[in-house]
Image: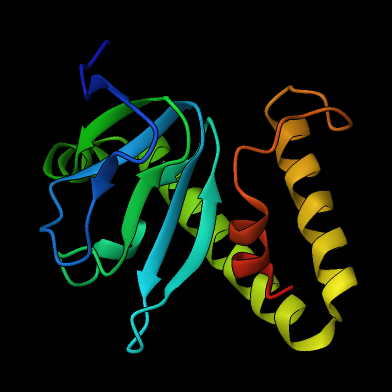
Length: 165
């Protein structure tokens, strides 16, 4: 059975997928490129919360409230599949394998957040930077790409912002 869930869209560098406060209409599957997610602090500063690669699904943080609490923006030209949340929600109730995969993806997001909290609380700046590069290498390897040679599409400032370096 083939079910059409999404439309593919090309997002040029700096184009937002969604903004904080937007209603949750879709989750976004990254097909190619890199997306950063971030919030704006009370002081008006950007705080990066993640970098999303091909194979990642972006927008989980809006499921609880129905509105996106953060921003997501393309760091380079990226191909993204928009998956309507209502359709995904309906199908996950009918398809146990889809529901299990969604739970695995959400669990992975939670684990990644926990790892980042631990990293920021325990390591010095050099160790945090090394851990960031190692984590990125591991993520590329999981997707079938080289874990030793890859292009960083984020700026040094963005890397420092996320890793607290």
